[in-house]
Image (cartoon, rainbow over all chains, first blue to last red):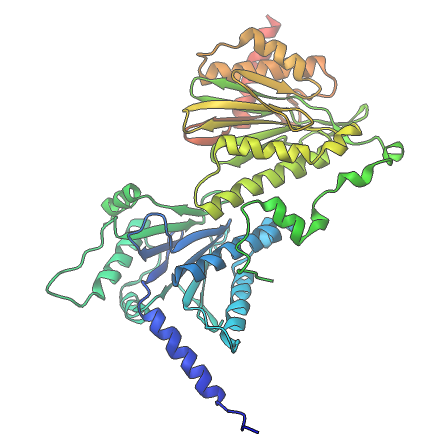
Length: 236
Length: 262
């Protein structure tokens, strides 16, 4: 009889982490930050139909990075669950925390499976409230289902730490939309290390959306290239 | 609960049927029960739509009746569907609201899943199938009939669709009105309608036709000047869907009344 092989859980978990980190390292970043009317979401993404940021439900948006096929499936499943819940009960009952738990449970189950690879994605569930007094919520979810609630801003993607560091220095409360976009763009530019060729963010290289707490039932809005250019013009 | 492996469909009704069938009305169960029905459903209506040079207006009165009594004074019968369309429903109140809610969720669901809005024709066709699901209800006299209007961004004009109880979809190119006071409203619109009319003129035409419908049909509510309840008037143009404010509607009714008094 052959001896059953043994691998320590530490080793398995470590391997999975290394595997995911390798994937995420190459993932483009998405920045979500508070501005005076809600949340602004900016991604480095020159593509015009494959998005990193999308609407889930009235007050909720999802920013994601990593493997497109993996986060796309979660995006669609999230919309489906949110619509069924909102239809069954009441639209206000669909919350960011509920959606975050749903994603977290799913990602954690996959990460613990012995015969499946963990998801190479990171997610930000973003939520604003109709009441301007209530702070907006940002939940960052990583591959193993752990999530944390972020204040003011959050970043996902390969160089998230560097951008977070930059935002720690530059972020201020109550930014206008244009200034918030400017701030996010500067943060993106600051992490490009190749100094021989200065890197510049233009309306064509980024994807910009916002959750505007002051607008009607559907708070999500995606900006076109022309609109992004227009916003840049208003930055002080 | 999350089933991302099932990438799924853009049809919300299908999802609802498979996930929570208890939330989808099954009217076939009513067969043979009509004898025992309590006949105090909220019903009776005038809703109408009218095309003008920059778009389309869709409007409805606010009253629901229970037999010979007023059941509700401030019901809204016009619902915004997406940025460029709205629906008004005539018939038994309960299923009417359910149909409008389901239709609105479906159109929005499609838009989010696909990243692009469902075309006006696509919306109109989907509504056909929703009306068809109510056939067994209609056969028992509990009718749900929508009037659908929207601004078609491709064709650059306002469009109106009416339906029959079997889900038949018919486009009207000028105006239409349904409900118990629909015929009276249509008679008025027929006299006033002009294809080149502007928004101000079109709103006046709508106000006058609701007035006439309320005058002739006991189940249609006119303006309630004491409680300040006024018919809903919704304007759909290239810029989107917007409600005409109660103050504006009130002003127009006062104008109409003073004109009639002369």
